Length: 75
View 1: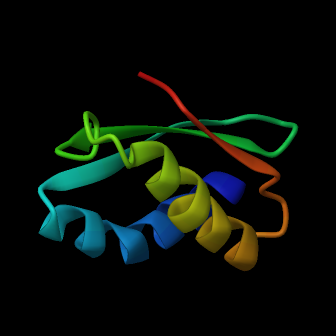
View 2 (view 1 turned 135 degrees about the vertical axis):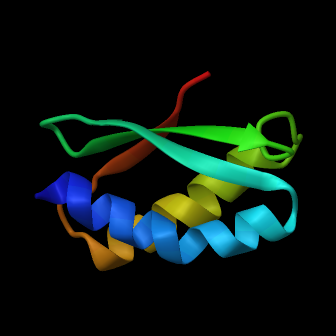
């Protein structure tokens, strides 16, 4: 259930990432509320990727899905 909510919210975020040549992929949602994501394309190697992940994606996911506790980037 949480996975579907995360995918839906990522769908709302994706156009902004794709506009910059990147994307985001859901890897896993752990039982403790940790969401594992992989940034791809231009976002994968961008020096601002941690900022995008924490201040952008994580903030939006937590706002829309209270069960989300943290977002981790996996490579």
